[in-house]
Length: 225
Image (cartoon, rainbow, N blue to C red):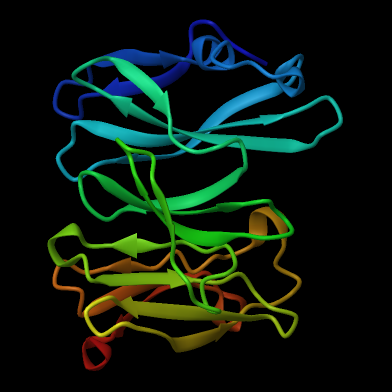
């Protein structure tokens, strides 16, 4: 449940060398809370900064009653240290906006989740105000064109997922496409859109369950940017 010899590894693709950077046990002992006792601990959503010098990760744990908790960290590779990024609220998804800032979705889940811009050094938080960004999603930004953010929603009561485009230069946030998601596809069969932009931000790829077949779709969004 809290291994001492496992955790987050740095692996070289070229020579297959690996190094244990963060032990699960060490993160658990950082600002330990009662809910962590005898819980099942794991990490997810690891994401390198654009300069490759640090990465975001989430420490998650399920307590003895099955309730899930999360908290977000930044690991600084050159200093070999980690710092807690956000208060102990439900942290879900993120993307790097620059080497210093992240866009994160977090809040008092399931009551409220919003998109925030957070500075990893000052820990300052800025709410991104929009009625389209007041629920969880999977944001993605190209740091070489960081005025464009693409994100999505989970299926609504009509089983519709929305694809959302934000353009900070134009101060616009809008739904640019919608997808039907069969309500029978739940749990490990669920298919989130997980949008990703091309390098020029003119194309977006999404994971789709259209016609109940899991596939990848590529959409030309150049007219929207």
